[in-house]
Length: 417
Length: 71
Image 1: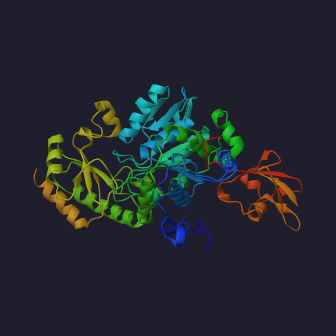
Image 2 (image 1 turned 90 degrees about the vertical axis):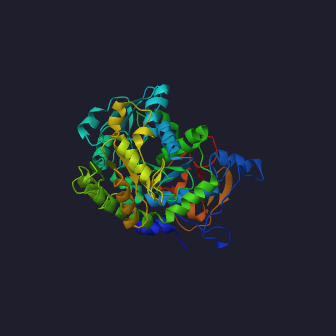
Image 3 (image 1 turned 45 degrees about the horizontal axis):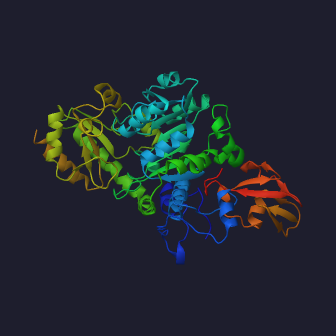
């Protein structure tokens, strides 16, 4: 049986793309729960270390189970290579640290997952990398935020929890004009809403723990190299040895052979297996996530005790037009809504019976959280405002239960106010 | 046609001209989608594999970035 090409539709690629038969014709990859890989001769291992031969060495650098999902994600995203990591945060850290050095700048969306904001502001800030945070829907501000030291633009395809939707193609044009790569965290949109490469991303990041995994049973991250950026540039002299030897794989090689190897945030084989299991059903689940989120958003929008609803799929959302265009009429499973204040938000969360109160998104179960008191609790009022987090805001990751039951759960909880 | 492939002698049975792209198949090179090819000391762009002829006496190196830790 030959390789499956890109002529297939996404839903088919998610099931079959990049898959290879396992031992004895197994339709699943083996879970290779091994730390290291032995060779008969010193010459063989030398060849692998020198890059002259393909082979596994040590699971921190690579592993057959990881490689199986890496190849599948590469096909799904139409990239040239993928590196799995221990988590989505590990993926962002690894990808960004492969590109920036002390003295460089990151131009980042201000609408970010809290962990990413902290990584850029504090952790990388302490190593001499400055980040400018700009509203990603303000293209003039983005262009103005680029300095001679800027080495990458980072955005989320759908901001979490702000729920804004930047025009990725327009941002990609700005990045291209300045000769810097565009990194897109596509965790919330997933390949189901759009392949970020087709919207101009040079590197796509996923927290596979979320919708790709789908059932919240294992953490993981992925860095997809789209192969679209030319790393042979005076802005990136540290890529020169990698470009010289590996050409369009320069980014993947620098990640794999230096940053990922040194940071050591590798994926666990069993987690990679489970995330790969989830990938097969991504389209089916996302279809329901999207449908349920729109139904719940519409219900909340019409409820007298709800102050506002932010879901890009609502026609009066300021992000509807961009989202509708770049995501082909799909808007994801995440939404936020506002009540009167923190106390009323807490009362509704406490009264929900189906929806789980926890810090995650992308599960089959409907999830809620009060970001201001939890995942964004460490941030000042000014930073919270930048992220679109207010005291009355509740975030919902709409699950795949029957929409009537989800709506009934929220209706009953809102009756408590 | 006699070549030096990854430091070892190799003989290729082929009629007419052979391109680098064809050589990948003739030598059954693994993971072709990820391989970088060095022909007589020059790294080739992937786009030029089909148009790059291999000749008797050439030295060819196949390189992979996915394996060990050395650059």
